[in-house]
Every structure is written in structure tokens, then in C-alpha cells.
Image (cartoon, rainbow, N blue to C red):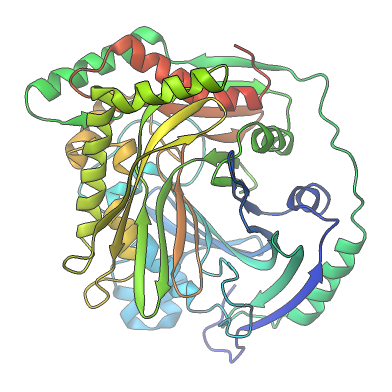
Length: 490
């Protein structure tokens, strides 16, 4: 825990080693980790970096409208902890992202690390879909499907960053300002280095007795009724588009690590992640950026990449190309995509300098294991005189591709139609660095594991001329990669 009267200062230690015989998954399997972040693409291979948080220093989470700090097994209300900073913080109206920012300032600065090395010193975690109630005056009253905080972020103690380009591994250990006890970070780095030497390289043993079965799934009739209700709202002029979803539960004897191993091989994606929050585990392979922000030459440039418009993959190259052309020529899919590009531009414009929003790529096709999507890219330049970096995340949350347009009315409609809170699904998952630059994915193609059950969810954008049966099939195509992960065949 923290003691704001002591004089302990933040420290950082770093060691770089050769890692041509190590993989992030081997480390996760044999040493364990709280977080694994990877990136890969079907057509271009894996990205340069993978990140592991081996051990956590503390975590911050929101539950039942309260904010909490957990450190070394001790839990305290954040209001009580922050009171130690003085009266101003004690009486200030708290919001979750501001709480993260307080503790981000306690992390060490990283001037001596290699330039561009991704290090999530500002916390790695998720904002659940219902976090939107902190941004707009909206209440979510539906019951939860599983027991997890609305938001939760892990602040790491020990990190591993794999540089796949040069086969190098960066070991980083940190301490935070005001910690009660001093941490010998150099000693921790050396201990981790020794532990890595003991990792043995073994062939992947896939389970042969997988038992997975669907225990709960939304009925087709229920989903198609939601589609018809939304179309009626569109006809009345209350909506342009809305994105309902349906949930599914799968009981399985697969461990989360085995499931994640299957997922990353079967459905490589730009955002692949494994978060161990003790009482539950999040694993996913999301194709879609929520927002990525980088500071370049005193400018904060952020990216949104709306994905809307979906087709199943073809059985061969010729059929795949035929389906691509059909998708790009589909008026309904193009209308849906254009609306969400416009919504992304509008969200970006809330926090950008005048003339700072650009569409830098439009109507491109990206392919994944089971589906292909239409993708565009919107960039904005943050107005740093009026906004903080974290305001970008608020401006775009939740993604229009998971809510609809107009956004607030679409979210209210979803709340009235769906029977449970979305929870982690449809929110944001990723990390902040020490300077509050960020990289977040939309939490889709994701499963929450708790007590032997995998919770899955998928949805799709509904416009006036959507066909209810076709929309239901689209949600089945989107969840297919998660069912493949669990060994459930078509």
C-alpha cells in the first residue's frame, strides 16, 4: 500500500537479453503472468512487440459505483487512499480515469529505455461497456451475467517486452513513489533473468479429451425480434443504426491458457490478450482499435478504425475474392459503414483541434479466420490546450460499431432490449503508458472465463433495410472463432 509521508522514490531497472529460444506463451505457461498482450495479422504475420506483466504491484477497480485499490492482498476505498494526498484530492469528485492518472504519476520515468519500447506503466486493463455512465447521464439497470468489476486495471511490478524484430527480450522491474517498503528492482530483474534461463522448450501438447458444450444461448427468434424493434425505431426517426448483441455460455474443461493457445493459432488478430484477474480471466482476439494515441513532435495524434460490414470467408481464393466484391458492392453494408465512419469523425472532432480530423483510409477489406470486414481509419489531433489525453477515450467510448447512431439513443435502446449488462463485452481493453499515451481495442471476439464457464457475446449493426435472419447469421459467424477455440464444431 502507499504511505504519502515517506520519502521513497520510484525506481526502474532494465536488462536486455537474447531471446531466440523463448516465446511469450512459453513464459506465460511456465512462469505465469497477470497480462499478455500480443498482435498478429493473417496476411502480414506478427507485430514487433509482445508485452507481459509478470507480477502486479497493485490494481485499481470500480465496483458498485465505488473505486478501490488492492495491494498485497489489502483492499481500500480509493477515497480513503487519496485523502493522504491532501484536502483538494479528498474533496474532489472522483472519476475512474482520473484515479488511474493519480497513480500513473507515481511510476518512474523511462528516459533510459530504448525509444519506442511499449511499457504499460499507466495500467493495463479494461473499461466495461457500462463505464459509459461516467461519461453521460445514463443508468444501466439490467443484471450482470458474471461477477466482475465494471472497470479494472493492473499496475505492473515486473514486465517482459519481446522485440520479435531483433529477437531481444527486455526485462523491466519498477517501484512506485510513496510505496510503504522499498523494492530492490535490480535484484528482481536478475532473479527474473535466472528464471528465464530455466524455461524448457517443449512441444505444444494439445488436449485430446476436450469437453465443451453450450449451456445457454440466445434464441434466434429473440434476436430477430430485437432487429424488428430497432427497425421500427429507425422508421420513426429515433435511430439511424443500432448494434444489438446476444450472449452465449459454454461449459468446458479447457483451461483458459489452452483456450488462448487455440485462439491465437486459429484466429490471429491485431489485438490478442490474456488478463488474469484471479476471480476471472479475459482472453480475446479483437480485430478493432478503440483508440490508439501517440505523442509525436509535441502533438498527440490518435487513431480510430471503424469496422462495419461483414461477410463470411470463402472456401477458396476465388470464392473469397467474389465475396469481397459482393461485400464492397452491398448498399446496406456500405450505408452501415459510412454511418459509423461519420460517427467516428464526430467523436474525434469533440477533442481535436480545428481541421484536425482526417479519414486516412476508407473501405478497405481485412480478413480473419471466419469473416472479412470493411475497415476505414480516422485520425485526429488532440487539442491539448483544452483536453487531457484520457479525454480522447471518453470521447470515443463506447465505439459506434458496438452502439450505433445517434450514440446515446442507440445505447438506451440496447439497454431496453438486452436482458443483461454487457459487462466487459463492447467496452475497451488495453493500456496507458507513463505519459498517458494509450492503445485500446474494442472488447469483441472475447471471452470471460469464470468457474468453468466461458461467456461469449456477439452483435451486429442494424439499419432500415437489414434482414433479421441474415443479421442473426452474422452474429453466429462472428462468434464462430470463439467456439472453434473451445472445440465446438459447426
